[in-house]
Length: 216
Image (cartoon, rainbow, N blue to C red):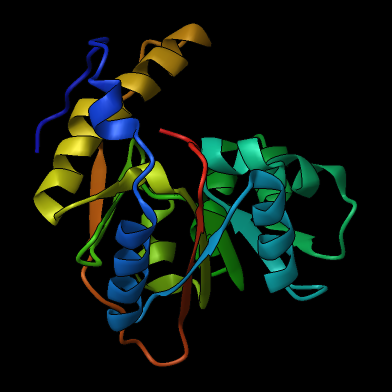
């Protein structure tokens, strides 16, 4: 898939509306049937408590770049040091040598707990992840033993096809606008991952759906 950069404002009501309870319930059941644990919480504050409660003390924790994690306060919690986890992300960001930092990033995809988000979730259970660098994709696909995604329910779409459209028509334009607002040229989609189902023994994929608009 080619790289696309755009500042077009997407159709917000189409891609950012919260679904009804029945749609969320169907999606949770579909995710479970594909080997992905799923649960619904009502607020960002509840999401933070639930996610933090799933990570044992002294566990290694790595995160993918995620507006959703920023919004619920998990990014700030990890930075604050007010926890008993081993913050792998801090190791990555403190290393200034590009070569050594890349080595740490590669190793970090196998962290005990990898926390992030996704760009779309189909009611039929498929999960779509889009990334500029692709650094989190190995963790999501195989390397991390425990993956936790925090996902606003506005990311639920009827089908995988609609999920892919949501990435290109909604998530990418908003991320491009955000990056330009920070002084960068924009964003792009470098890698994409479709999780069809999880059947690797010993892996635990969990999606915490939040009944609020989170991320793009």
